[in-house]
Length: 50
Image (cartoon, rainbow, N blue to C red; front, side, top):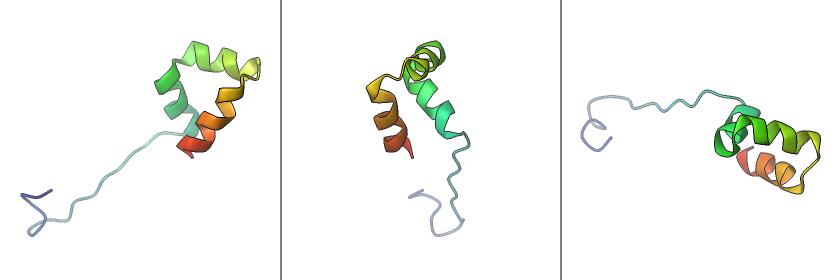
């Protein structure tokens, strides 16, 4: 950005849903199992990502 900020517009884009970001951090199988068993950290994680 420092090199091009005066000549170009710089745009960041992050595509993905809330759950996709969570399972990328935890692992999809673990995340799905933890959601099913209502592990306490899942709600905290989703709140932080949101």
